[in-house]
Image (cartoon, rainbow, N blue to C red; front, side, top):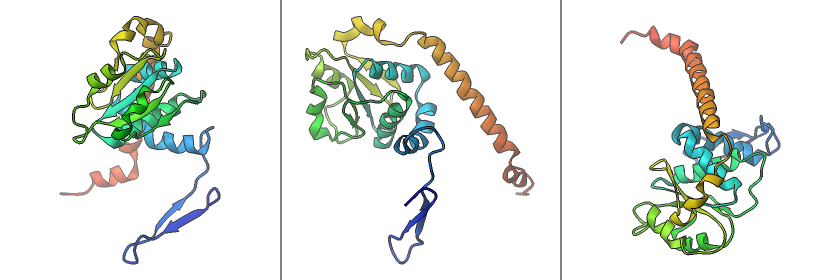
Length: 209
């Protein structure tokens, strides 16, 4: 459908039809970026520490290999899509796979920068952050490998690349992290105040138990 036009579909005659309106992007972003931002950023910004986010973006700007892992597939793909949006105005032109099947794990050994999500759930026996780093530590392809574990909310870099750490992080990263924390805190306080002052909240306060 065109912007502001509705589309509906019905899965079963016994269920109500699902109606959705295709809205034009409110941000100065392509539509797929705007949709990814609406879906991924609220979760990503509220879950990962700001320092970890800045480190992840620094690695991507340095054209490193970044493998996002976690026990929850939704959170893994959310992190991949959210990082892609946060890179703007830069575009990630290397391979990006929100959810890489475990049987295709050899893909992370490709000699190019990559951004992939890899769910390490109960089916991924024998695989963890250490095994992923060890698998690629002996590769001499000139790229840095890092693993972002969204379950532990930490980022890990292969020991063979530790000497490059100081040159990988973006300048003034600590000041940037502090500023972003303050901005997000202000936004949260403003949202909470709006919720407290909303008519719905006021009416609920007047309901007797």
